[in-house]
Length: 84
Image 1 (cartoon, rainbow, N blue to C red):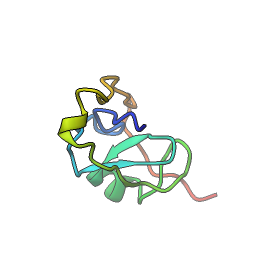
Image 2: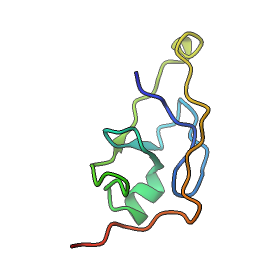
Image 3: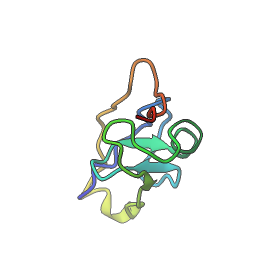
């Protein structure tokens, strides 16, 4: 089950469980659509994996399967991955 982290790791924007603006990689690193496209070019800065839209958990399931409350953020924001 996905953690559904509550914020963007780059800009700390709130991304509630129903947000369609949340993007994740296969390790569930979480970013807003603006940071994912404009800063990161669709690539996770942590693992270099692809960022895709995070699925929305139905509100009726959040009681039994709550979203994470742990905020993860980079103190200095994010920078795009530099080409090798």
